[in-house]
Length: 537
Image (cartoon, rainbow, N blue to C red):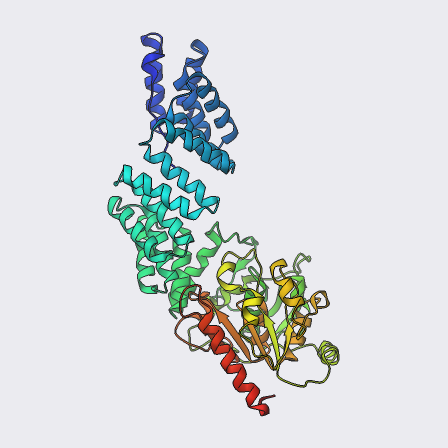
């Protein structure tokens, strides 16, 4: 966020020595030599405790060095001395924004704008806070005001683009990013964010090119490298995609915990004959289920395999091919020679679109659990359909993949037995579930994914959004209809209704961003066709 270094020291500096010190402090400050600037500002305040510019700029330094509470305190003292300086309120707003005191930050920016109606930076920063408050239309308006005052304000175009992206108005976002880049051809974040907007529109080649422009300016830009990898994988360019996917460990937003072992990372080069390798999960349950298929390939290289997964997956993966020891995450690790995260195995095996391993049924349901759930459901009278309509609400892209149960129910034929495969039901879906007696729900009786797999096995079809249950169903070879947003996760690729990862999965895609209507209609028609063809169940 822009900081204002304007000074009114002419009316307050007492003597040439004090003025010289202030000017030198200002030079140090603008050069980023904060320690030198801070020392001089404090020296000035010893001689002139009400030197308002030194107080204010000490507050600015506190903000720049992430001491935000002190920043607010110092700038408040400056405001008490001189309450009509717009820059003070704007910079205080910056510190309040960092403290997540968002309403107070808006109020501070409003004060700045009241004192200086032409203050473009205050309008733009105010727009950023309004975006955080989810007042998105107001945020766009605030950025527009900034641009009306300063049409050459690249940051305001960039910030407005970010709001449009959150509004799913990706064409407008791209236009804003383009203008920011015209004004500042080295605007690295604008190239990156434009790439994200292009990817959301499924313009994958253009997205990769925009990421490349960001990377050319900043080769270690982990976000751009990782998102480029995802675009390449979605576009079936596996060779480069898997290599770049290793940037996930440097991506702060991914929040992955890289395991640091004294043993070497194995990525396919060293011989594993007679060696022990430790494979470990790293991301979501669905990722572990999808990539655990590689254990058999690793075992065929002569390795003894230890694999570590989260507790809810232990039962499901008990009989995983090639595994010597299956550990619950957090267990004490036995000795091993190499290690590899599960999602690096496609790179290790040079997986391409034609060499995806074990894309058929590679997991099995537990027999005793299958017997239990079959008995609990009773004799099947009609088509039995499993339903999954929402995933983990904490997932960054959940708003695009999860749907309301009420919206799904409206598009399902009546003459089926529906079974909820969800362990947890969101508050917003409970009334729809409770008011539909033909949907069975077992909730806490699903103790782990072994129960989920057995219950899936009892279904004729599983209809699911893109969450871990879909992977379970696909891995056991159950016919699965997967509902996908317009811009899906990379693994489902584009322009196909099947999956090379799971032959039993059929893909139903949104035809437009946010519009589930066409996908629901197709599901309804296909289910109705199965009901009419009674030999299907």
